[in-house]
View 1 (cartoon, rainbow over the protein chains, first blue to last red):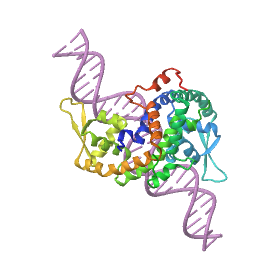
View 2: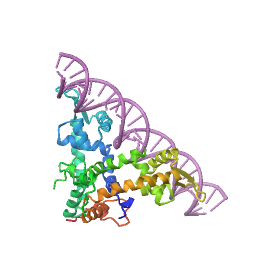
View 3: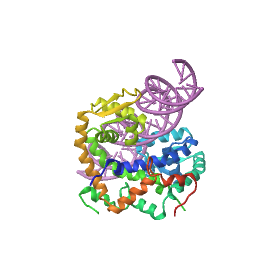
View 4: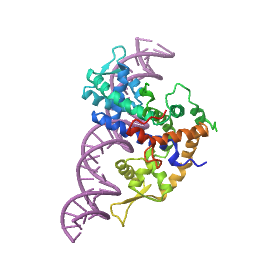
Length: 157
Length: 157
DNA sequence: AAGATTTAATTAACATATTAATTATTTTGA
DNA sequence: TCAAAATAATTAATATGTTAATTAAATCTT
């Protein structure tokens, strides 16, 4: 079976990202935000106070990248760092009032794009894609079948 | 309908990439290659001589990034640049003998990973995912339905 | 044929990704 | 308790991504 380069999973995923991200970026740019900065504001909305590690996990941003991104968000007064008293290694990130306000302004417009994409295919098709993607995904509570297939040669067709 | 952040298409795609890329990267690292450098060698295998623009399109790498990546591949003697005589704006990128040899050594191992991933789900499930992803993808010959859904509010459930 | 327009590649400036190492602090275990 | 191991965040070094501007060459227009 010829697994061509163009049809490899990495290329399929990247091509999809290249297809959908410009729509989001155009929106973020209107608010002088990057995609990554948005993800942080978005997560801080649903969780008042988050450690750097937890933020990295929830935004899928690498911890070393977070440092600089949060520096820039802090400079814009959109978030701030709070050193934990109980464990002084830990840093909590919180959104400022300004940060929360911005999140609330941008959020519905992001959702609009989310829903446009979502409604480009049927409910069943979307659900099917979501389930399949999750099988290849990191950090799934659902113990991924992929791992067994990766470990040995477990096949499935 | 609540399109939660975690289930948005960008996050689903990034989570899948985070799940699968480490396997590839570990392989590339053994040959002192980055993922992007590999993509270029891979494309140059199936097409002797490619312009910078065509290479950007086929690898999904942004043209400005290509400049630096090719500089580094040139430094490693894996590729070289050839200025076109017919149109002196155009630059052709070609793999050196060493570059082609490396490609041939790495390629089967990449395919092994490709196939492991491929066989983690059934043929039908894979095909379904591929078709759905293509609907969101850039540069599809198949005039994407997504565009109409994006242009107006065309729904599909 | 000269000037305006377009095109291919590159440069510039800034933001983020990747991997390894470091720092500060906390937790473990003898 | 104290040294070793573990943990959270950061720094360092290098590579790539993103957007706008630039350069050089070709094409188009009149």
